[in-house]
Each structure stands twice: as C-alpha cells, then as structure tokens.
Image 1 (cartoon, helix red, strand yellow):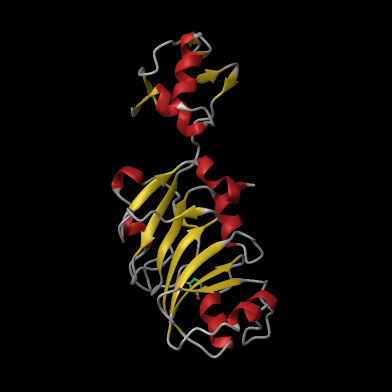
Image 2 (tube, rainbow, N blue to C red):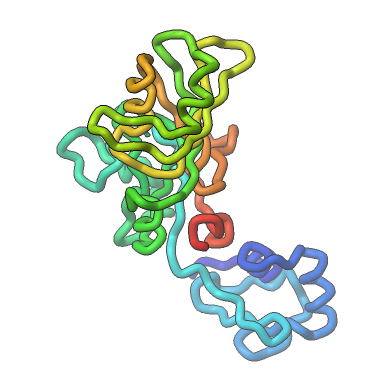
Length: 237
Ligand code: URA
C-alpha cells in the first residue's frame, strides 16, 4: 500500500493550492473515506482512499504517465527486435502492465518521450492526424537559411508528395547549424524529411516538448519521471 500526504494527493490532482487545502480542511470541507479530516499531513492510501473536497470526489490517477528523456540507441516500441526498447529504461517502481511508448522518436533521436498505459492518450499522440504540438532542436548538416521560415509556414512538400501542415522553424542565435522546429503532426521521419525537402539534412534531433509537456533540464538522459493526468491536459482536450 503506497501512502501519500492528503494535501499532496489533492494538490496533485486538482487546482487547489496547499494553502487552500489547509483552509478547506480546517473548515471540515475535506473528507477521506466518509469522515471529515482536518489534518493535511494525514497519510492516505494512494490507490484506495476516497477523497471528497467540497462535495466533489477527487479522481485517483487511473493511468500511469511517464516522461522519458530518451537516449539514442533505444527503439520507441515494445518490441526489442531492432534494438533495446525504451521500456527497459522505466524503473521498476513505475512499471505497470500495458505500458507502451506514446510517440515515435527514431532510434537515433533523443529527448521527450511519453510512456503510458492510457490507450486513448497514446492514440491521440500517435495518430498521424493528431494535432499535438511537438518541439524539436535539430542539428543540421548545412547552415540554416532564413527562407526556411516561410517554406515551413506554407507547408513543406515531402518526397512522396505529402504537403505538411504549417510548421514553425527558428534559428539558434549562437549557431548557424542549430534550429528549433515545431510541428503538429507525426508522419514517419517527418522532421528529417522536411529538412531534406529544403536541401538540408538533420544530423541530430532532440525533442524538447510534446503536447505542452516540456522536458525538464534536470531530467538526465535515460531517466524517467512520473507525470500527472493534469500535466497532460493539452493532449487530453
Ligand atoms: N521527426 C523525425 O524525423 N524523427 C524523429 O525522431 C521525430 C520526428
């Protein structure tokens, strides 16, 4: 049984701040398993407790959401036939049945990758028609050109004739071979193919954000952190 402080449990699942929770508790407006609770440091059972704030049940987290800072060399798949699966990097305490990578970072790509057992969320991210925004830093083989801004905005045509949705691209100030790219669809090798279409080539690709979830600087390569359902509202809605 995993225990968690009542105020932390509520603040992680609702918009209430710790001080608001303290006030509500002092007025008897929070109950756990049917009994009013006035002490916010009470430890409750994370998976079982029924918490009600002002008459509204607080949802327990049904699914697991993990953000991995993917290293190069791992495949974004549950199957390890083309190399070690990113699932091998999930620490035992975060592992649950049915986890899979909700996104397709290439084997040589790095950065933000969501791993979840929430099929609906994964579908939203993986669907080619999904409009979940994703931001990448790319290292280019040749110098960045200012004309890319308009080309990306008006829809790059890929080598198979597919016209990409408008995308944003911006150069780094201190390097002529680094750029930020934001796309909101997820075709196979999309960013690499977009740069190929403008006569350049992506040498390195790192995703720094997916669906508004930003890869924290403190999350080292190969490390995972657990996210909350509310961290993913941009994807859920
Ligand atoms: N686009 C690519 O080309 N590769 C990735 O890994 C992600 C987006």
